[in-house]
Length: 292
Image (tube, rainbow, N blue to C red; front, side, top):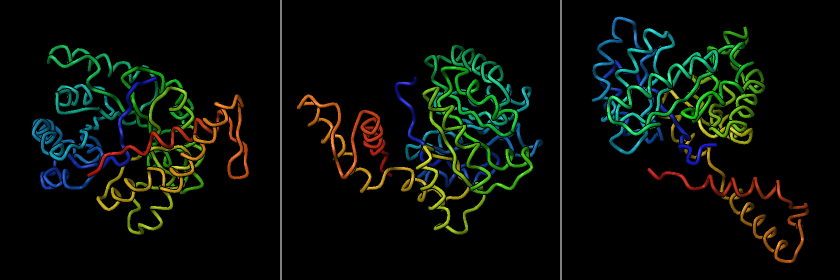
């Protein structure tokens, strides 16, 4: 279990090879900016995008956002990406198309060597795993527990849906996202994602409903591709005021019961015991978010 998991309600993708997006990213209010070296960058431009990465990382972090770099899945390209990405200004590396635990351990070992060479504290560079195939989903518990460097796991909805031969709808993505939540909770890391397509941002009311449903399923943040999604995710991936007030009341009722040597309490027409209180305390812990 990690003692301190990051607060990543919204993680905004920006292509590493488009300077105008890099320059504006720090204004978007996202908890993290993912500088993308993978799908968004054509092969001929990857080398120059890597060369600009140190400057890009400083730019996107200007307002305090965490910097994450999505590397390529190919081990040859990944090795080159890591050479560029492991630095003081990058907090995490996002690994796409993870198929097994050994893949993440190989990447973690490479990062450890680079951290030592560059005088960075051991464990400085964290990992985020993307599950993007049906075969990988079957191994998600093993993947989630693969390395202490891993702090979050998510489903890549578009690639996963293609692998499964389905459309990325709320119904089709429900089960795989639940598996992500279960694997993440078992390993003590963050479950990220939402039950919908990452590319749908035209109807923000619909998007908010998707995020609220995902929050109730146990997901704690997610990736996004458009700035309009950031505000919705920052607001909806935290408990509502009513939920916070209810959680406070639950904890008070239970603590009073304990002082009276009772193991349960009554509140709002229901019984309050240890599991209910554990959920309430987690709700209260999640209210402490960044203010941008």
